[in-house]
Amino acid sequence: MSEGLAFYAIFFAAIFTNNILLTNYLGMCSFLAVSREVDTSVGLGWAVVFVMTTTSVLNWLAYHFILIPLDLTYLRFVVFIVIIAAFVQIVEMIIERVSDKLYIALGIFLPLITVNCAILGVSLFMVIRDYTFVNSIFFGLGSGIGWMVAIIAMAGIRQKMARSRVPRALAGAGIALIIAGIMALAFMGFSGMLKIT
Amino acid sequence: MSPAVQILIGVGAISAITTILAVIMVIADATIGNYGEVKIRINEEKDIAVEGGRPLLSSLMEEKIFIPSACGGRGSCGLCKVKVTSDVGEHLPTELPWLSEDERKDNVRLSCQLKVKKDISIQIPEELFNVREFECEVASIVDLTYDIKEVILRLKEPPQMKFKAGQFIQFEVPEYELTSEPVYRAYSIASQPSRSGEIELEIRLVPNGICTTYVFEHLKVGDPVTINGPYGQFYLRDTDARVIFVAGGSGNAPIKSILYDMLEKGIRREAVYFFGARSLKDLFLADEMKELEGRLAGFSYVPCLSQPIPEDKWEGEAGRVTDVLDRMVGSGENTEAYLCGSPGMIEAVVEVLKKKGIPEEKIYYDKFA
Image (tube, rainbow over all chains, first blue to last red; front, side, top):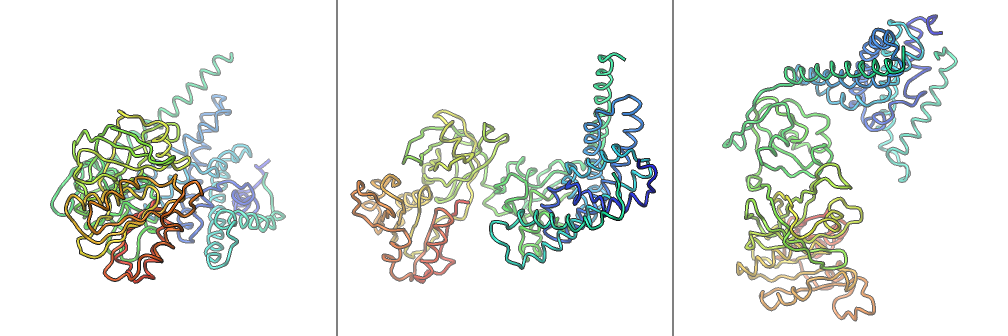
């Protein structure tokens, strides 16, 4: 049971031992598509951190105050997806209206992550593992940061790789997947520290 | 609780949640997303009013100003560049890969990515004002070879198109099995401008191509077709230099248009047309071109077959078009070249012509991308 776990344990576990991208392999599509440059992946990373944290809060509230009382937990997939999509859409509109700078830095990535499975994954893990409200916030935040760490590392490697000779058949997504696999192996090194299941 | 009640609660709850979210979205769209009416000032002379908050490309398209674009506004072709002269903020990361250093300094933007949120002024090439949408009807479809069809469209609304020989149009493929939304594909006009009431196209079958499959398998005489145009910088320059035309396959279309235009306007220049085909079954309109030699002084037609088969009994030039050019062109002094064909052919031909001493800026081409 996870109630025994402190929020900081969950937070660090979500970044390192249970990295949503490298141990669960969720959120791969935008990870592969936007990891060509460090600058853009930082932007996407922050957008993911923000959306993961806020949607895990919203979905926790929806789950505990709507779905459980009505005995509708089997509908959580649909409800979570709808909430994520609507929320991201509205946030994009607000950002676009309020600040050009913020829109350039964050806004344009938002449509990309509406359909990111890592976002839905975080909300689902949160209910499967029965987290408390506070733990969910830190789980969302940690997962987002973990995802950002992974994509920035990947972008750094791919930027360096631009100057190395990759076999033609593997160029692009092929080599990126292999690198993601090796990174996942490296992250397994953390797994002895602590484990959340 | 009986199962029926449970299902009703489930359906009711989902409906309620989605309705609430939808209402919030609608309210947000009407308040946060509402930029009111904004003005687009074009070339400091024309003002159009559009609904704010939408991409420049589609706002312009609604006003019947067509910026060439091949991807339909997804930011993946980089064609819909427009120079913006008022301040609209920094470039978006989605635009940067398509813009050169100079274009960034000049505030050239991708019109499909740039949203019009306040009054802006832009500059577009004058000739884009001529670009319009035309409702047409298929007048005839004729097989030129086993994989190339000649399609003649009769213009209905507007009934005439003003264009320069060599330019192209975009053909709108409606929704059908292969595409869930209308797509646009570019085709050169094969008819000359004097035939302004109709547009002749030469369309080559590309296996699984969205547009060519539509034309080959669905299009019938009498069908309505929508096109927009004309576009392009591929037209005969007004000089007296010798002209070399090189084309392969349906690349014949713009050259044919230019040749008939020369004939009708009395433009007499030394001109050679090299047409590359694989074997006799890929060669088309050769008789017509031969006949043109007699009517257009200074013009000669050189079909080249790269792989003639014995049954062809081919006595003309054999070998790839690049080899034939190499043999026949001589010095490239005072010469212009106009090429139309596949990217591979064009690159090879440009190499040969440069070797002959034709400067790159006098080699004009239309690549099928």
